[in-house]
Image (tube, rainbow, N blue to C red):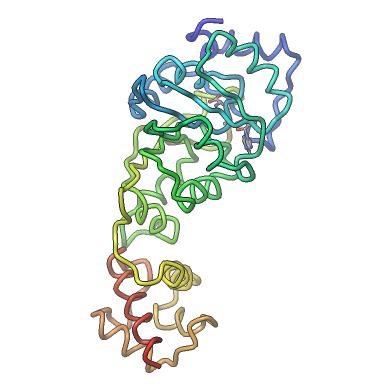
Length: 293
Ligand code: SAM
């Protein structure tokens, strides 16, 4: 099976039929059949023969083949045991691919890195199963894996939330978390017709360039994320009201008003108007304030 073939719908269909495989919607099994989009993913990932790639959800191996042509080592984690024998077939000519059977949310990623990627620069490149996009991306970022970049196909709305700037309806806790760890950039939009079967939603390829250190300085990272979560708890409420109804803070209205004044945030502002730096200033000031209570 040559590398061009699987992205061609007729050949993907052939592989599926040869293995008697039936697609599982609940595992997000929409396989890429658009060579142009595949090329854009590979271009955005820009991996060299020295580098390692972690792929999540290889499916029948369409993207995996192309990654194996460019990278030094590819590790592909697939949950569906029925696909393991399919991948054994479609990837048999590639000695630089390791298929790991498991759930990406459970496997020991640090162990995989230590075993397969020692000394290599590593990127994640994947057409993600949409039902667990956020848990996957947050796991990759929070575990502080030594990643260079993450190039992933996600649902269009999720990509927009990841890349959103303050002030709009898409800006929220996900934007802040992603932009704390990475610099996001939209690569391209992808119509449903690029997949077999076509999903009910539009898709977007997004690149997350992992920062060597987080974009803002924090005194207490857990507190920062609690403050962010609380600030968006009810989007139509002001920051003061959201923070006041947050059990973990136990601050009075007057104390919250003092803190907001100290960081030059207007009392009528809503969470969605605050930049990442504003949230950092706010949570660092709450931290100092609590130290002196
Ligand atoms: N990479 C292939 C492509 O581009 O055609 C398939 C992408 S398909 C959108 C998502 C893949 O993720 C499927 O192969 C599915 O079985 C797999 N998957 C779903 N949940 C998973 C999980 N928790 N861990 C690992 N793989 C998973």
